[in-house]
Amino acid sequence: MSDSDRNPDLDVAASIEARRSTKDFLPDPIDSSCLDQILHLTTEAPSSWNLQPWRIIVVDDPDSRARLHEACFRQRQVLEAPVTIVFAVDIDAWQRDMEPIIEQAQKTGAWPDDYCDIARKAIPGGQTALESSGRLREYAMKDAMIAATHCVLAATSFGLKTTFMNGWREQAVKQVIGASARDEIAIAVLVVMGHADRTLPHPGRLPRSQTVFRQRLGDG
Image (cartoon, rainbow, N blue to C red):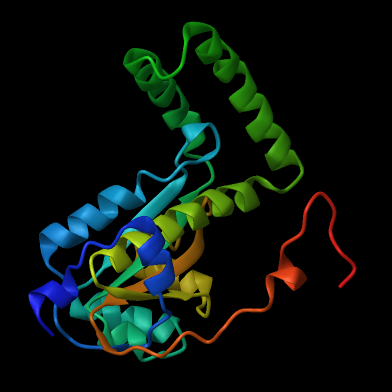
């Protein structure tokens, strides 16, 4: 595989078209500067109130990958690919991150002063309401999944292949990332990343008439 094959710098539309879930990886490492750019683009993802509850852990050393392999029911792609990225969430982080986030947005001019005042009242109220209804974890997970999608498309744009993984034991994954005793940490999804040994063709999609509607959901 040539360098040009590995780094075609696809645009967003081309990356969406080119993305394929891949389980057959070469052992070749990912260039560190490329990985850094992917992580930068990942953290550019939007989130509710810009709270960024995700905690992104890059697992790339052999020992950690072996332990993660066990936590993922020994799915081979975790051992074959050079990198697995764990998307976790910290459901309590908003309490310490809220004010720095507001101050930064105010300083850059992204949020006007009156909006910042609203945020200082609305964020605690909203988060407390979500916690009371048992949905705070769910909302943080949604934000993490948006970031994970950014990650996958960014990786595709650099010629890498990925697969989302939802088959793992949460407590075992938390132990690998050093969060086994932290109840505020939850695991959203894992993304395996590397150079593909084999890429399967597009499996097809249902007709849009069955999945896309205007104004009201159809009856099928």
